[in-house]
Figure (cartoon, helix red, strand yellow):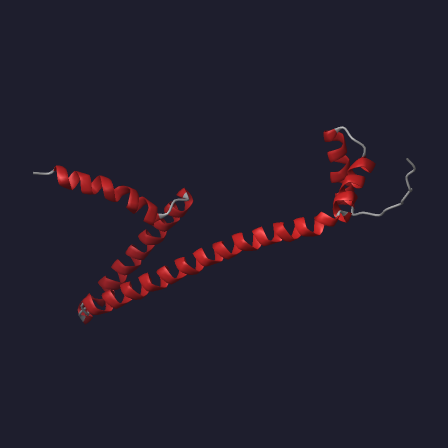
Length: 144
């Protein structure tokens, strides 16, 4: 079988990866290039790329829908909390304003520190609460 000789120019990082792959697989660089070209030129390759792209788009759509749902829940949660806070909290007398501000700063600092620790754990507070709820309900049922 005769083969045509081609001189190609590729990016240095691609050349390095091609060389590493050839060494790892124990095959020639030419055979890797030939297989890649055959795959690219195959009549099925366009269809395969289209199917792969459709799968990725479907996955991205589902992720976007979850993000949109979570964002809606977050907005509703914050709005409900703000409404509750504004309707339930009592005004602080002028004489106690400085103490209230100091307490607020302390609480906010504690909140930010706790949030930082929670985010470092990589867990969801909602998941933690859902896991704790059955055991708390069970413990409440065990009480006389």
